[in-house]
Image 1 (tube, one colour):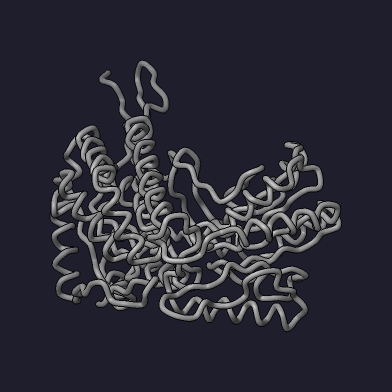
Image 2 (cartoon, helix red, strand yellow):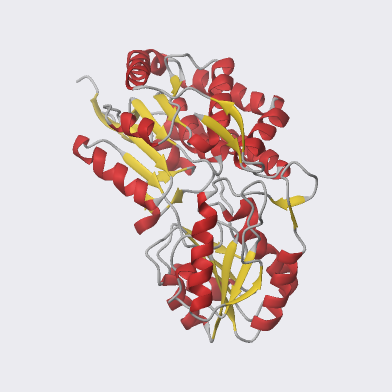
Length: 456
């Protein structure tokens, strides 16, 4: 399997894909090793993952360079991702004992009632390419801490990073029979779905997540799917600093080239400030440096996948055909690499694909609204339910809007951020299940109730 550098279109590495036989052998090894890994104390497992985090820091520059080379993320953003992954690991290891230890629920002279959190068993983690470290640690770190063994399949677009993750986990002290990596594309994923794992954790598109969920449903084991979004953002007319809000929300839409499930995908602006906001937003986008992700100051590098450029072109053409105006960008950059100009569309409506279908690229539509009620109606007009953002100087106003939206995360005066301390979850086509927070730690366990009667 060739690893392609999206900045040049050239092959940088050839990696052997797993076969049915090799995947089965890896699964058998994980199955045989799970009980032994679970017998390690919680403190011991936490210490191993703490060493893994330290190794991420030690090798950060090399890891960031590999990440940039295989998926096009600018070097600064690649380093930020590894730093962010370490911050999440830090929260998990600091809180593991609090949320995974036995819990006494009631105690009397005669009876103790408690909950014990047992590992699920052998976990299948089919991960994503856009943030291989951040998305990966959401699953395999708490899974390992909880005593599970893990089969980790990185995306074929982040294979080199996946191989590095395995190497550093083993260097940190994770046994070979507690963590294995499955290499390949869709065919390898199909092989994993044929195996009797004790839990499946997927990050990716709605279509693939739905397919996985249906495939493994007859086994009646946990299946979590962290899927996409069409994340809305509303800018109210009471904001104090239009230019600051425009810059922050432009970053929320275009960071990582818009290749994020929680990137802002559609923006609604109160009519009283619409013109000023649009001017500031477009000027911010035009100020960014687009180019080779290894060059200093580059904010927009290539897309990770060449095929996505055609998706963006189709959305833009559909919008223009229906009356949209291109304020900037609007086309691919010809030559080597998978580059696409950051694009802002105005005069958009919900009759256009760009306002309804996930773009997952550097394209945003900005729509004028008359009042909060119209904004709220439009924000809810979607099959997705991942995040929603409101910018307003009034907390009460923002809360009223956000509380009415069926989404897993609400942002007030911020957007496109994730914290290990609170749950990360989607609703409807944005997925099912929870990672991060105490709920994310416990997602990799089976709670067992104990009724302990004292001797007479």
